[in-house]
Length: 262
Image 1 (cartoon, rainbow, N blue to C red):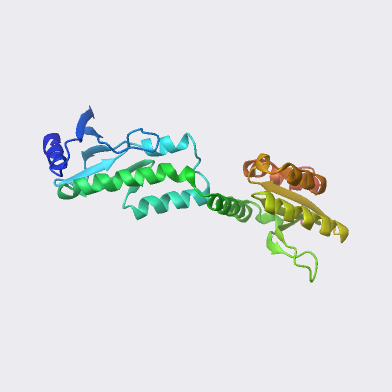
Image 2 (tube, one colour):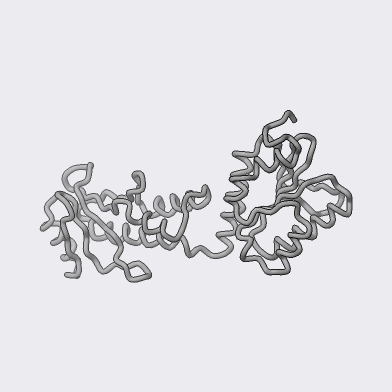
């Protein structure tokens, strides 16, 4: 790759603020006034493209996802889908964490800006609105139920009491015992779950309740108290349920921690 030609093409667009620094043979870091919100420069590298002469590969050598990982986990199914949507919509590809964009030389300036904008959007995933996070929590919990709890015959939005509009997020069963599973992303849902549990207890339903929190520590003191009084067991965060939920169901159903015949 002819670094002098590349730099000339970039600077021809009306700015002399771009510069190139050869990190290792054939790989150049682009020094450009394109920043993240904290003032750090967006990591952009240029190298030869597999497409051959007339093309340049714009990439980041995995540094964008590394930066994001310091403050945000993109490993859940919902967040992974949103990440993939961001890069696809910006014309960027992902090779095992290395984000890249192959561009013709005559489109290099535009492609650098396009790539850097995509990197900024990826790093800003941690600033999702609260509603987006709640949606992700429910979707992640639902994906776990669908993929890992099939042996418990999950039924979504079941109504334990006829003609009474209080539903259970998922009804599970094992060893002739019913389990009511609830996802709680915040105070409002915590109040509704506490009311539902009281109603089910008044109706003398034989069930065991499992309450999975997005973040139990963020609930109000009153909401925590109501749930603690009425829920059989709670999981402060989703990962706790993923680690212990199956074992707990076997144990609570009296099958000694091992699968029993339904």
